[in-house]
Amino acid sequence: MCVLSQSRGGRRRKIIGIDKGDLLGMNELTQERAEKLAYEIFNAAKPVIVIHGLGGKRWRRKVPLTDARYGPWLQASYSVIDQSLWSERVPCLYLVAGRKDQIIRYVGISRNRMRDRWRESPAIDHDSGASISNQLFHSQCWKHIETELTTSGVSEYEVRCINGHMLRDVIALLGPPLSGISALGSDAEGIAACVERWMCNNRSSRLVSWNIAMTGKKIARN
Image 1 (cartoon, rainbow, N blue to C red):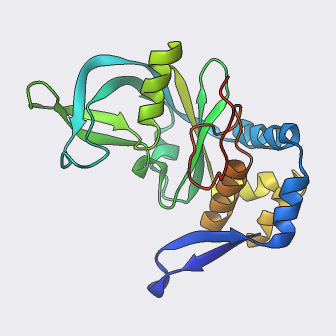
Image 2: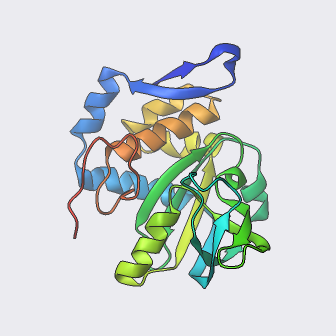
């Protein structure tokens, strides 16, 4: 299973590796099999946010100009279709997919609640400098969303979520190597983090192609 480090006081944790036995098990999977397992998890997750499209006047975050989140960004037309899951205070795994093609573009985790990662951020009109209504934003995904709009016209996405406890029950039924992660028991954060890393290790054009961290490889562009 994943090896986790814990900082002083036990408040912040991060993955530092995967033990050798599980890494070998992961490598034994074909890419096709790995993707099938990932999509089993995706199907078990619940839709939380639907992005209907991008447009409108560009906006920027209320952060310093040197901050990568500054912008300017396109506005999203979106619906939060499950407010309880969006705000639930529990570690979770979330997945971003095209709404029409259902291809998983990104995987991430939240240690507290999904709303902390897919947030409605205080916003400023880029041209006038006036404050406008809060805007949906995700710091790792937004550049990819805008790039995909420019290159292929795709602008509709679905963001799904599954908390770490429910994720444990799902992967326990999927067989090795994922079922081994369920040995973490009630450690919802650890389970979500390990599955995130596993998906990143199996990155392809059909699986978490937007993820950069923890992948260790480049993918062929279609």
